[in-house]
Length: 415
Image 1 (cartoon, rainbow, N blue to C red):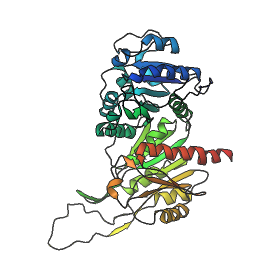
Image 2 (spheres, helix red, strand yellow):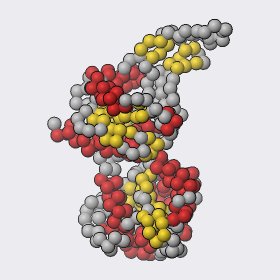
Image 3 (cartoon, rainbow, N blue to C red):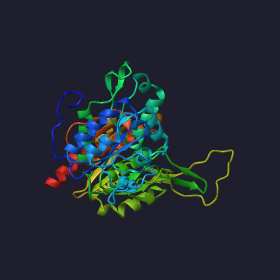
Image 4 (tube, rainbow, N blue to C red):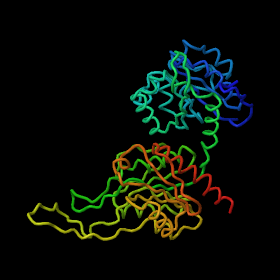
């Protein structure tokens, strides 16, 4: 029985899927056995990785009996079967779930500590990642834990929020491990969409452009590129073939993504137009300069007492040019507005022949540019705008891809 008393039915929803179940040293560790059992009943190949603290609370033999696989504890142990090694498990995993997760394991993952098999594997996986915290309510409400969970969200982890209730220590509050059925269903849903973009060719633009004035100065904007990179990373994790055309950002290249570095609006235009014919989906998240200096001084412009005037000319409108040759391609744009967001975004949506536009309110730029969170509105060509809550940019990326997969791609395939 799950904590809620509802039986989890057997099925094949996870047939053929490999799940890493991480178990850390919370008193709720014994509930991981029921989670493992439910996932096995759904057809999953479950491999449990335990911390040393978890071994003090529940036996490794329990998980071996439930899953048919030896629980992994010590990263220096030799593999016990020829087919599965501790190194290859992270590569094979379709999902990683840590339940329960202590404040300690959350803190380690937030700063990249890899001092045991669980944290090492968590840094190595490139599959959907879920984590279910369980701890004393006062610990869970601590600012440090909140900040660490925020970092995990920005890294792509989905948090399965704990419940309000009485914990093992007798305190009452928010911190009790989420209902087992909730955890299992969240895992199954993550598996369903884990490869829903398999084989889809997606071209993404990200970051700012730099328009040179002279050898040491340029015109640019505050874009960090984080949203575009999050989209590229999320799409790749869901099976898409992703090309990312990026202005200067300094961000790490998302796994399995082809990166094309550019600097100017002209270079971004050329990179996009040379690759657009091979793309089924184009997502324009870059903040491309609308104007560029008409002339670039070959020498550094010296400071003078009088003002100077720099003549600017329009750059190519990449999104408009892509929209002009749309065909059956899905085109998604972004609208960063300081006022009349919906009205201005809808105008851009129609003028540039887009399927969807993502509205960003930048009236408070410090909450958008460079931030790890975003507050977006999805505005489709048909239907009502979808106002999403503030979330990490990786979560926002997945929300955008959810809409593309469930609506735009679905309609395209039905034609």
